[in-house]
Image (tube, rainbow, N blue to C red; front, side):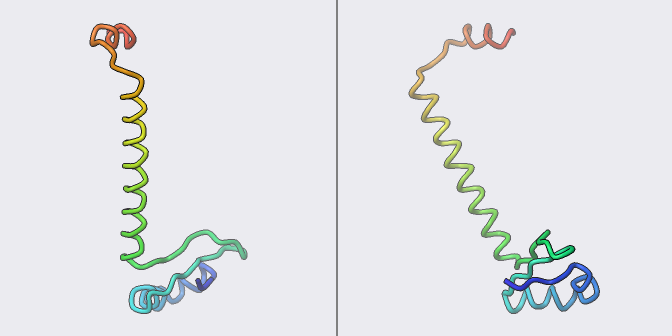
Length: 84
């Protein structure tokens, strides 16, 4: 991954975008020598979204499994617990 100061990226944003979009390069933007953000292609951003969605689904399925293992709760008990 290439590092670049934000000021340099700002001065030549079209070049940064072209490098990321067409060369599939990842560019890490820095401020005062510290990493603050990364510029990645749309494909990589979409892949990250898919990975996050898959992890969220896995967590949700695990939570449902745990609820199922705990057994069911009657409607009346649930309403009483919620105060409705």
